[in-house]
Image (tube, rainbow, N blue to C red; front, side):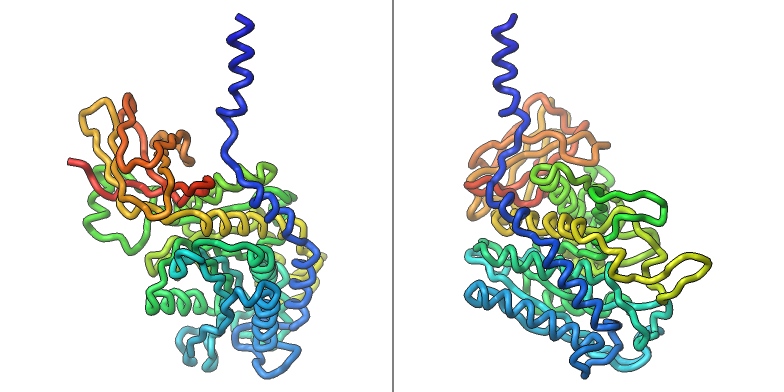
Amino acid sequence: MKKPLFALLILLPILVCAQTDDRIYDIIDAVSAERIQTDVTKLVNFGTRHTLSDTISQTRGIGAARRWIKSEFEKTSGNCGDCLEVFYQKDLIKKGDNERIVHDVMVVNVVAIQRGTKYPNRYIIMSGDIDSRVSDPTDFTSDSPGANDNASGMAGTLEAARVLSKYKFENSIIYVGLSGEEQGLYGGKGLAAHAKKNGWEIIGVLNNDMIGNISGVDGIIDNREFRIFSEPVPPTETEKERNARRFYGGEVDGISRQLARYVYKNTKTYMPEMNPMMVYRLDRFGRGGHHRPFNDAGFAGIRIMEAHENYTQQHQDIRNENGTAYGDVLEHVDFDYARKLTAVNAINLASIAWAPPAPKEVKIGGIVEPSARLQWSKVDGASSYKIYWRDTTAPQWEHSRNVGNLTQFTLKGIVIDNSFFGVSAVSADGFESPVVFPNSIIR
């Protein structure tokens, strides 16, 4: 009896350990809490970054802030042999477009593209918001430091660019500071429209909005847990696709949900000390963020943020009231926590940018059979493919099998009725595309 048990113990690490790449650990180690603190402090010191604030001053207002952000992207580009294409993307929003637009304003995003070597028109995006606000969303003159909301996300985006610019990727990465979030998600709307107009193939958007607070208004202090918000299915799906879901499933398997699962799995693989929390909502209850305009346009997009918010530090005039200090000020930001969530973004940007494209078509069959049959379109650059499956009530993919460089496979003994399935493409060095849920039936 001892010999088989010993053999099992020898095999166990092989069975439970996922394939990893040392470059991902190097990326985690390279992210700096000190640089993030410096950037958040700089953004806070612009006084206000309200979208309608001063654009002329060199020291105050959103104009000065976005010029500084652009200069930081350009500095990073200079350090990597001009590897970033840095530019403004802008749209004029007229007074009265909604009640928060009290005068004409040019909503300006700061974009930095790290062009892929093989798929230059395929993009994985990390975004942070430039703008800030106080209690009155139309008050564009009062001090509005916006340290956590959202200098933390903007600083994380700048830092991810510094770290990942040291590497070459097959797919393109976009780092972007979006404006106009507090006025109605205008920056995201503008960039999503720009992407559509220019034929960008967007793999996904990682929107970072508040990644620096660990002390919640609920009394919980936690520097390891974070939330991933994702919508279940795209709002752009067709009536045919909606009808198909009634019979074949997929209510929680849209492209944004698969992106969220990707981030969850990759984080648990490389940063097991972190506790990602999948939230089955587009965003917080009744609230919105800058991934939503991309979702509206049919792109995959998720929100990454702290697990425990403190509402006394969001959208508040700076004041002390009944013993409570209100305001989104610098001392409430935990920079090591912001470093961790920046690293979460960076490793997922890198993993997707190193991965081949996902299969465009995945077919499934096996009605009244004791097996599940899958076929998928061949992917340029894929060395193998992995089939995933899970119980229909499971939040994460539970099982997987790499089937080599095939484009069809039958999972014998797996009854199609009792599980959901998906397929990813895998590179020679093990990086996977997001999983594709079946989008066609084998008759």
